[in-house]
Length: 501
Image 1: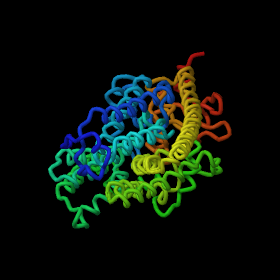
Image 2: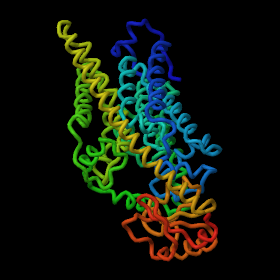
Image 3: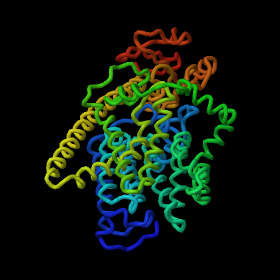
């Protein structure tokens, strides 16, 4: 815990009188942040619904630690941090409800701890508002209870920058150093490349700018990044032929990293598309995307307020890390997913909240009711948009995942039961739901060859899935076919012999 300084209540709301990094210890301030975190947890449970099935990527991550289904192919860009985070539940229970409740509670706790780091750097009312702004974005609520790494990178980024600023302000603050290392490790544990982009501005300051050089902070940052990424690097040599090969494979799977302007793709995904690839839809209606343009403007106002108040560093640092965190997903990738920008949003909301508080409190007495009303109405409209998109996203995601579960039940009816293999269209999540192994002979998830698959099909129940409008794989054209919805299920002769009549 950071060293603290007992101070009168009036001082705790005035940053200019509080040495940065030395936060007053007040139960009330923690209580307000805890209330935001609890509300966030309850919102996840009420609005995302614990019974929503696992998504495609979730099936990959959960299968690595689950006793319910064999481990799915683990491609080069993925890291095992989120699988290990889910392991305390997923390793012994197949209950999606229990897993979502566990992650919702854990994500609320993570938000509380990340906000708590910033006490003393900003007034608690700013931090509480920042937490509320982040926690009410539809993408935050949706991914909080999901077995996906992006939310945890965001929380780690928020905590890391706060710890970095505290360690700079107080060389004796060992808790800040430990927090900096732990936060960097959390980010790298979840997504090593994202961690590098987030910490880049901090590393540059620590190495290149004399007034910011803190050898112990640099050591904590490097140790945390190394500890978090160590498993990913070892796996690169053990399973992918080396670190360079894994990085190249990861780039290929993501369409080749390079100069790709994906700003419009991110805008298109804001209507609630969890993955926009290829991203060819029209840009959503203005009311759905207006907040995306307002956030940077308010953050710029927050920076202007900080410069005027001679406390630039505590605002500029999260903005710089937010900017670098967004670079690969706005300018280097050829598709979009809203979750990619969660670290960007998490770091942006503190300057935004500071700007909103300034607008309300610094306005003249005569104008204050007008300003307060305008801000309140804008926030209410923003909240309505976020939850309209969230509801639509949850409904569409739930429908797709229910269809996977129904297809898995149909496979069981046709005799494809564990141990079994599923290949073809949407094979990976359907195989997980059916308790089967998934296998592909081509594409980014290629994990076997045609010869090996046919050899397996001679003694193991195997199903090849194809869209009704598409031809099945050449090797499965002689297998008995069964139509189910938009899919045609081709089952191996081995299955036909043992299938129910």
